[in-house]
Image (cartoon, rainbow, N blue to C red; front, side):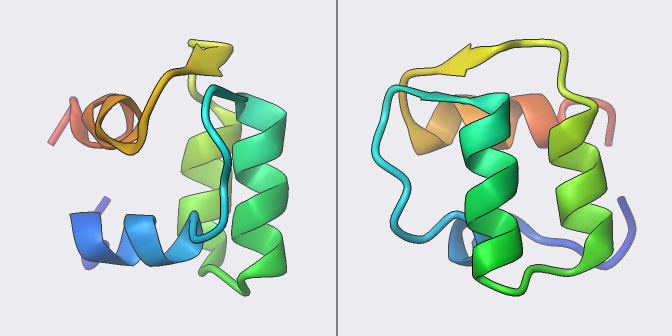
Length: 64
């Protein structure tokens, strides 16, 4: 995911209450006007439930 950083991801997920599912994360990112690259990456996460922002970040950036 070139050009996207962990702070970009956290900004996109501002306001999310955890635990949160993938759909919740995607909707929050869209509401926060995140780049399409972030919303697409969130949509393709295999895990359905995340307990905190660190888990989301780990899942999004695991293949980098």
